[in-house]
Image (cartoon, rainbow, N blue to C red):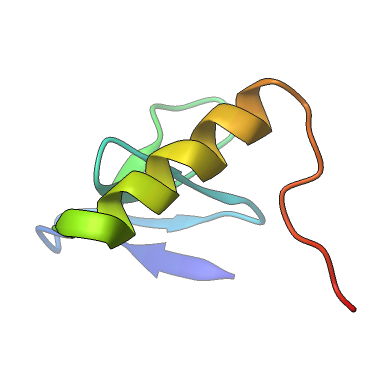
Length: 66
């Protein structure tokens, strides 16, 4: 898919997205990743998101479906 950077200056093809430091990035092979969007969350949602990030970094199963 093609993605446009948050500032509209870069259009790049990418098949992978990731979230880091309150922003969504697209992985661009052979180039610097581009920032697609920034966001702010607060309170309990922020705490839950930090727990999810920690679980991902530790290689734990983050989501379960019952």
